[in-house]
Length: 74
Image (cartoon, rainbow, N blue to C red):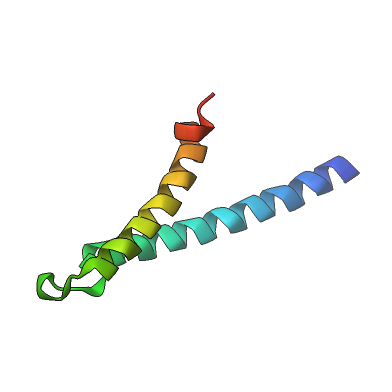
C-alpha cells in the first residue's frame, strides 16, 4: 500500500468518525427539541428564551458555514 492510500484511509476513518459524532449530536438535539427542551409552557421564563437564543446562534453559525450563507456567503 502506498503512503498516499494509507493517508487517505486515515482521513476517511476520521471523517466517518466525525460524521457519526455529528449525527449522534443532531439526533439528541432533535429529541430534546421534540420534548420542548424539557420544559412545560407553565415553566417558561426569559432564562429559557436566552438559552434557546444561544443554541440558535451557535446552530446558525454552523448552518451558515455549511451552506455558505450569512457571514460565510461567497
